[in-house]
Length: 160
Image (cartoon, rainbow, N blue to C red; front, side, top):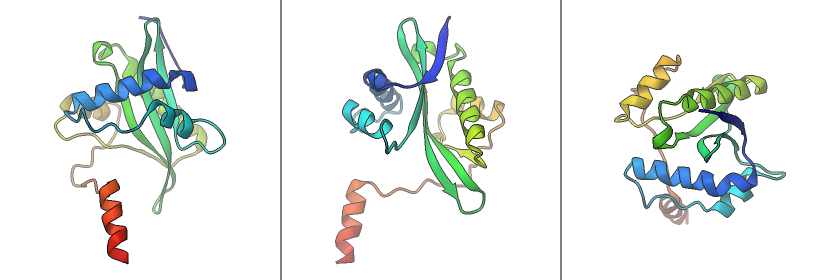
């Protein structure tokens, strides 16, 4: 199967959003996606980019994405966060995931980052196995902590 890994373009964002929804469905969070195609265009392109996105472009359209953004480690220095590496279910096992991860690592290396980090669901054994085969350390003794939009609002109200 022929494919090209390239930087995303604004015109790719409809297909990128479709893959984001496919991931949400896979993770049994179908109603969790709030971001829109316009949000992706606004936040991923222009003078104040919030993320950088690579796509796996096939003859049938975008079949995978890797979306990263900058972070800073107080222990290590510059880092990037891999928010999502998504390969369409029908294309898993085709090498797209490896090609996308390769591109993320090359990108991080070109930026001189000290670390590339991401999360994986503890029940997604195939993804864990994939990442471990690539040399990633899955830190099972760390918990992800988040304040969602409602949590932020409640926190702000408690400050008054």
